[in-house]
Image (cartoon, rainbow, N blue to C red; front, top):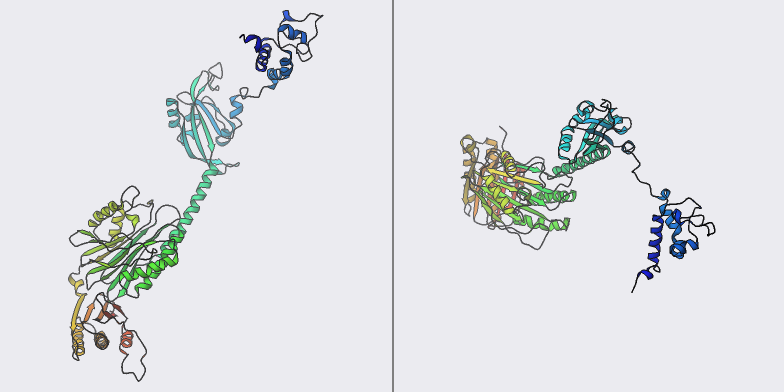
Length: 604
């Protein structure tokens, strides 16, 4: 089949033929027939149309299809008209483009960066600049901004370079009364000749490789960022102030322990954490130490932390075993906020026993350094975090005799995103083994050894306690004396005689001697009447107080009550509470109770 004879009947072919005819023939004036001169119609022929479209007879002669020509004549004419073409930027000069933009523009050429051009915005900020001179002479501001070495790199490498937020004095605002900030981009360009003669005023007389310096005003962005940083700093300061106000403003210092703590908020935002610590003197020389961490960050975590810390102090006054204190905290944490959980360690130190009795609710283990420098990790028992409920906590113990130290800490000290937390605890053990000095010094050394800086991303709390060895004159201020009491009428006079002899040997004043003997007599009489064996009278002195304690096998705790005038008993505890600085009672781990009182010693 011959497709040529059929192709004229295809609409697409007709349009292509018409377009080729228009492109091949020169455009005649309006009213002039189209086509070459030799093809012009004779006078007898039908004239062309006004718009230049050939007549029907002419189209037939050339073999075109009249329908296709009539359908697309107007469109082809419009496409070929130069006035109908879309505008382009080819006709615009570089000067017209760069001179109207608000950015700073400077063009230099050659290895000395001779100035070829600066636009109006540049001249407004830095003043007019003479062309043809080196950038060091004509553009000293670029030297001050440190751009000349960057321009050398761009010229050598042919790659653009950018520096951000360079300060320009008096370079912002319409009146130029405030400093501005600009981001400069240096781009390699080729600078063409601008004049035929080597005139110094002519920027460039031959094509050269050059650099286009383009500066964008970012003053508003920089000022907005500074305002945002200032606002965040104020918010963070307020959050940290809130957090620190919920922590102890001054740690209680027990007689037998040296204690220090430190807290460092993590990150740079306002979302502080819920780490806390506390030291609580329980009386009779015993001390409670607690450290905890509320999961999450922000004011809510800090608020929950404050409530838990207050509750710990209240429960501690009950002088309960550590696991019972955590049991009470567990229920309270769920009531405060069911969505918040917290870890906690509660420990009690008794100098008479030389041990640290503790319970843990999902917290990291206590580390104890013995006098020989070895570090041991407190083992289980531990339970789930506070607020989970449904768990019975238990207590454990670890030795803490004279010369030993212990550290309690939160996970921010040892936890890292790229390491296992056990590795962090092992690193803390090594650091603690070599951290000598007072508790304050130990805290600082642990922070440095574990790499804790001001930019650390998690809160850190550390509590260090030391049980110092007493030697020399210091040892003379700490004494213990105990007497086993056997039932019978002779127990009370034996207790009075023992107390009198011990207090006399400790060289107390006659007044304090008599008060101590009276208190010991009343406590022993109360135990003989309401308790049962085994019974013991213990006297202990420190550099600040005298402690008298009586233990027996009955777990019924005494209470102070008002005795009626006709009552023959019931006044013993009231007498002790009146003459002593403080008194209290607690249940002992093996069953039974301890009733104690203490007298403050005069200063000096």
